[in-house]
Image (cartoon, rainbow, N blue to C red; front, side, top):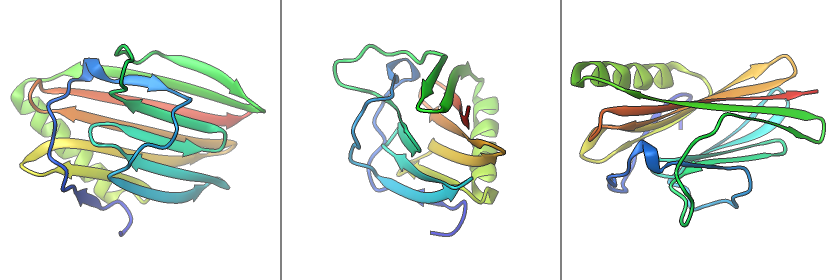
Length: 166
């Protein structure tokens, strides 16, 4: 895969909703539709697409944002410490008009196409159903952003995470 390229997924898009996404830092690896392994700021990073959800493994962190069996939906803002690291996660859900949604999805795809450390997937028959992840270096760690798009409700979940040495 070339840097920043999208993957045409073969798994059909399932009607999920932003409200069904859950956050976890203790999930084991789940079956991924696509994986990209990178080293950023000296830290091994695994970007993992799980359909309309993601996992990022970086240093001590195992971040999962997904529809998790038996879990109540919701994406909290959180700050935690891990063995000399500070972890910050925040998420927002935005609603769009049809035109705004199409424009925003097009922006996410263009940005991911040109970003050197990106992974994103497009679902068959649903070109506006996209899950995208990008990771960037920081002076003392790294940051990553994700987007989960829901064409049926014209909602986008955007997350932002920072992992920095303390």
